[in-house]
Length: 390
Length: 135
Image 1 (tube, rainbow over the protein chains, first blue to last red):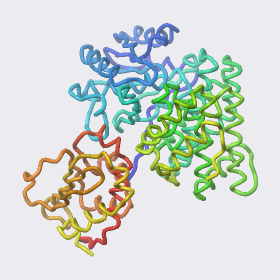
Image 2 (cartoon, chains in turn red, brown; image 1 turned 30 degrees about the vertical axis):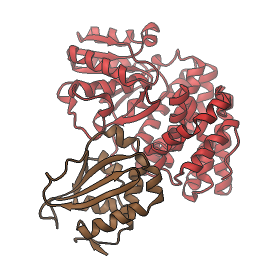
Image 3 (cartoon, each protein chain N blue to C red; image 1 turned 180 degrees about the vertical axis):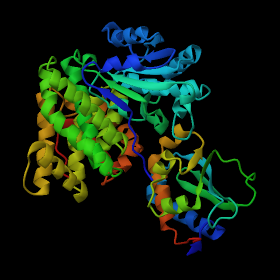
Image 4 (cartoon, chains in turn purple, green; image 1 turned 180 degrees about the horizontal axis):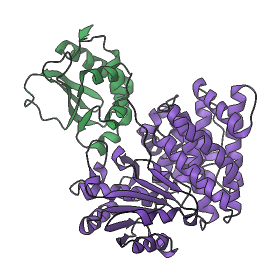
């Protein structure tokens, strides 16, 4: 038995008008100060006002939300007792909204306990909505919650299938203003989700479709959205690709690009999309060098998404090359060094990076599972941008 | 070969864990004991409690207990017999079993998550025990 879930997805022009149909009394909006400052909560609160749904904004979410922020959010939502919790923002805000609605149901729990081990039944109290402003983490279409233990410098992969949002609203007005750097960072995250979802050892026919199409759309539209943020078609397609990427990996599992990227991001405080996107080609090379099954899948993807042809290995290499070329085109780092990480500090942290990556579920759900030694080599090679040859 | 969930099976399981370099390395800082509980149902008439004490990469004890009050382990993992068999024969991933609620765990999830590799190696050790299944 396995499952596939996704929210009701409302998408396209004027998707926010869907809020006029929502029934409820009080909405607790989870977001960050920047989203409020940019005026991106206003289109939502205007709609809620029009249907007499009261609202309160919790805007304390930071990038890579901490356990402490979730604790504060849990206290605030407990006082407000809404019947909707709405995450507006990037993955950090949406993940925080998921965590906070779980605490609405189970206020006695610590944030680090918000996992599959518990039962929440939060829909007896409230429903969950996600409105992304980046394209994106795909959090609007997954049940995963990624929080950061700032004391231990570690990302925690939490969540439960219950916290798949009930509704995701993909309205292009919410992403049009994304600056190029965020467009690129979050766009590479989409690519990583899509590729890893498609090739996950936990993947099935149900999860392959969204991953494949999302990858193709990223290749077609990310550079366009990066170069011209007013390109409405590019913005829409990247929004949809982000959600499809979420559907793909969220119903299978992400992979090595994520486990290595998480470790780097947690220790060196780098944006999620930037790190996982940077590691993706290296981890793909690692898989290609030891897994025929995944090489075949990369080749399928290359043929569909990039028009590659020829033997599987050559097509798979073409896919890796295409990803590196796209990263370069959108100003993304191709190595850890390019991320601005000091070499001496990095080398000192390699054991910690390896330990974190080794113990992520995502390291186990690939077709060639690295041990400590191989992970150490991947981290080392990626510093100077050396292609993986083992 | 040993019959599933007997003391003989536990003895073989403990041996496999303590022979495993991969487990020892992955669990070198682990401290915590478990009840692995096979729920009543199918060929299992009464719940079977298997106590396993794991410490710094080694198994200190693996025991079938008849009185569940004998120990108070920090973790329990329970599932029907059919699910345990699927996990032990690698037909079902243990994490997937938890996600789909086919198995249930109590204990500090945040702690377990820091030892995913060790948990994986523990399952690998289970596969190495020549098992006479109950059905």
